[in-house]
Amino acid sequence: MRKIDQQEIEAFEKQFRTNFVNSLWGFKSVNLVGTQNAAGQTNLAIFSQVFHLGANPALVGMIIRPPETERHTYENIKETGWFTLNHIHPEITQQAHQTAARYNRNTSEFDAVGLTPLHTPIINAPYVAESRLRIGCRFAEEVEIKLNRTVMIIGKVEEVWIDELAIKNDGYIDIEQLQTITSSNLDSYHTTTRIARYSYAKPNKQPEQI
Amino acid sequence: MRKIDQQEIEAFEKQFRTNFVNSLWGFKSVNLVGTQNAAGQTNLAIFSQVFHLGANPALVGMIIRPPETERHTYENIKETGWFTLNHIHPEITQQAHQTAARYNRNTSEFDAVGLTPLHTPIINAPYVAESRLRIGCRFAEEVEIKLNRTVMIIGKVEEVWIDELAIKNDGYIDIEQLQTITSSNLDSYHTTTRIARYSYAKPNKQPEQI
Image (cartoon, rainbow over all chains, first blue to last red):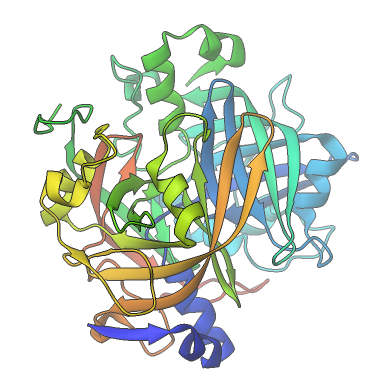
């Protein structure tokens, strides 16, 4: 194995460095984030910096790049206080990737890529009708990360739409059964195959498959 | 599809709710985090709340639960200023899961689960010798999330150890070739199969496979 140090990473050509560093953290949670502005103009964007923050209350974190560049998702969340997270499966992966194109403010990515907005009474943001697991989130808090001016948006789960068959007896959702995909870097998408589910880890006991 | 609202989630039995909410965000970046205290006592813990924060400088974020409970990883990072991230492949997945057991402070998870600590000159934290992609990080910043008292640790990449064959011409690291695994919930582990890598998304252009 070869060592690549920080000086070498900083000296990489910009796009090479972006690919290299974005690949480092392993496979990612990748979701379509649905928002709209006060006038009801919808927006859809693919995000791979989404992570669990807590189960009770159910909280999610999401990293957004510096808001001084045009960030429709960020502006809409601040304007309405809502967003949705929508899992991606193989049949909509190419469309999901295409939402990353820089469409202008008056174009909805739903129309541009051919996905269907779905509205429910409480959540002031569009879901993706094609998605098999959809989460409606209320904006809860914004945390600025001073080191590089990224922003963490924290959302509180208000509702979940899911095929009940995917929820197992112990609350585990079999997202592989739903064909939820994962991503690496900013452009590679992957299906999964379960190795095992293991029992709760305890000292002096080998984990068992459950 | 069925709607499950926030009141229903809050009324779930505790372990059911933990499984349900931890499954919501899709597949996760799962890594072994290596640390040691000032006396050199090593610690190894599996983390699935790790995410990209920036490419230049190369920054990673990691969520740690409230530090008032015993958190060896958190204490060691604060004591030494260093941690390592180590990708997991199928041959070490069961051992990686077992690091989650609550071993006492004088037991190194390396010994307890049978993985090998590896030290390099600069990084004051142990790598996992068996891992195929290892990242040495310097502690950069701590951000408290007031909503639920979790902590985000931000690290700056100081070195990467990797098989050079996995680095593609454009900087993309083929982590699937390294057999890096992904996880769902806190107990399920998965290998991946690439659907496609798509070209940079631009309006009015279909993404192409690259």
